[in-house]
Image 1 (cartoon, helix red, strand yellow):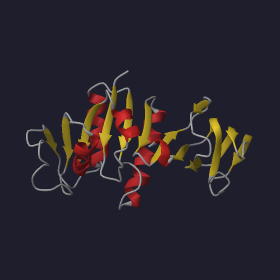
Image 2 (cartoon, helix red, strand yellow):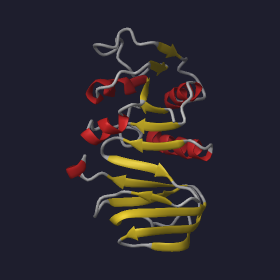
Image 3 (cartoon, one colour):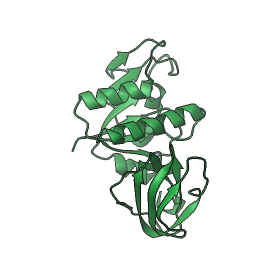
Length: 213
């Protein structure tokens, strides 16, 4: 499996857990996402984007970084361009770093939609910024090794059918949850949890315990 990490411009806390998750991954930076590289201790192999949100000169140590420059007026985000570059290099799994939080809520929403699209295409994908961790869900039951008491929510992007959550403070068994319901907000892990969604698009978003970051 070829794992790539995409550095995006959102919030990042360069915790030991995040740095460990990036170990062994190839790195591509999208526009201002390059600013996270130094704190994460990584060197991207490529820097892509329209560079409208980047400083005029790259951070120290990255002056010779290969670039792919795109016009500001385009129909894909810089994050999409970076993901496309990773896929062209053979990526089979992706970590989207800096995909959550940050000054632009629309960017965070777009990154979650991208994660769902990529997962539907068969890629292993997650979003991780050291503070929150997110994974697209599927009909295949998946175990998540969350620490006891970890807060998590199921973010819905459609009506859901067959939602099952085992191992949580508030478990669910094969329930239908309409898109507008807040039922899946703010659950707690009682240890490792297993989640299944038979039909619909959803993402598990977990808060990372500061004690294990």
